[in-house]
Image (cartoon, rainbow, N blue to C red; front, side, top):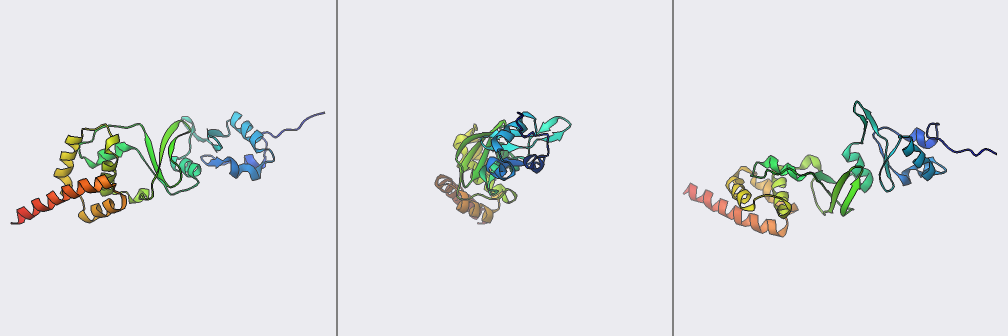
Length: 210
């Protein structure tokens, strides 16, 4: 008596559903298979799917260098079941030209749902629950300055050197945007520190006017 099993090479509903570069949660694939776990194992063995984390899979994209992972935004959105997040590498602070020079091999993800370090594919992400954070297209220099100060104790930088440059270049930032960023995203410690620096700046500018 022959036993019939589904094959990833056959046009099963689940196999037909897959699209290169897309990320899938196991729960979302259940409607397409009568034996989802068995078929997922077969698809992974055949290279049609790659397991990124528990219950999370993606269909590799073909490139000249071989199979490629999906876009990071796709992976994170599927993992969080939410598109509202901000992913960044602390090296982005270097773009402010305030004396930070270190390069970091880490990814931080501000979000509303998950907290902790998780391995997705071959990369570890540091998920941090935040009540408020800007969307990626709303990240400004003022926000980056505030966030850098919020996280400065985690950076491998010379505090005295960087803070001296920040105080010297503070007038180059938009005052209104900086106050808004402090109000919306600044920690209590960052707001106290910036209050001192902004007071010094205002006093220095007032002295020049006289």
